Image (cartoon, rainbow over all chains, first blue to last red; front, side, top):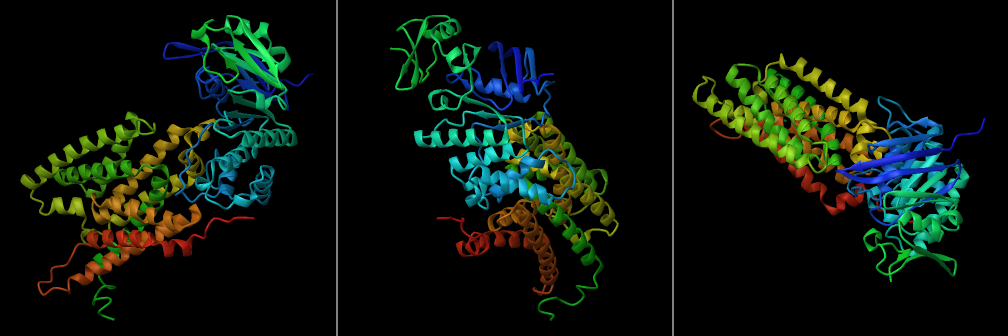
Length: 271
Length: 292
């Protein structure tokens, strides 16, 4: 019997405030795969991730995680939100924040075991965070906090790690560092990754599959299968070209063509 | 010795009750207060003190023990805040403000009725600013039981509560029932406010709730340490306040003592000021570790 995909989204429809945000979205993420959820700002990437997490009501469709229907208490998911405001005046060490990834959902009295403390140490080492493990988490830099959030998400040994725009607002060097860190820890832990981003080029070297989202609809497959003129033209509802220049991909639309449907997008040049 | 502790302090029955009730309510306020400050719910905490004023003033009017009024009004107020939306970040101040204004209006009504129709003298003073030396020893079992319930609730929900305080989004993604955890905490907060209202009055109970916690969070490196320091500060300020108030009867020829609540609030504030000293903070909280 074959292993079910770690994430199976079928015909998903999400709407709120009378507006359809996602329409008939279907894709799968296989075990251990690195999948990029690509689309410009406002196309529904965060909504899709929240639906997978059970935080967004869906109108129709199914979401299966490890072959089982989604529930809000699914422990198979690790999550790194786009932004988190941690108060530097709260005395929570980075180490303590990572440890909460193990047992934050547990009620009642329980002391952490020696094995759990070792898991915390390993998670900190995995993301190269030992040197600031005893610092208040709220006083860390954005990049350091991101490493701690990744360790927090990974420590419960999920089968799927969801990351919402972890590359936003990073300089190119930091983007490379975060992408290679994620690729390394995902391979080491055999965890599948679904990472949302509005720019795909930094992910091209590590991405096994892509879910390209626009106008509330999605196309999924390998990069070669999806980032093609015919596929994206069908998705956008008008003609777009896909150009490759020095290993970088650019999605280009004709001037004035379907402007109302074309959101601002680094890979979608309207000129 | 008598210039430190005036005669009769250790053998005085009302003093014993004051020390016990004061310490118990200070412990609960400090523990709950640390979570209040971490969650950024100081305004909700203060609003519940005004709600407690309503309960206290109503209990005087109807001839019920003030502790019942403080606790009942606090729990009702916390429930109302939850219904209106105190759990939502955007609705938090709105829910708190609405409950606060209604409670203050009702408190004004009952305080007026207490002053004009009730035979009880000094009700307003006792409700707003406390009168810990007038407490009966029969209050102790109720105070102890409510404190045990409150600390028990905090202990049981501690980890989900902490996670939701640090990041509601991450907590929700982990399947933590934010609404239930938040409501349980609001009820614990209401009881803590009710208990500290007995000690130092409803208006000043914010001082025991927020002061020791804010001071402790300033000077400690770990949350566990903040709970210990907050409890020590709260109990220390309460006991020292009781002692100074007792001694103050002997300070003036008229034998006019000063109120306990004044001393407790002054000591809490003094501790907060001292904790702001950069020297103290450097000593207690080592700088960030840097590996080169």
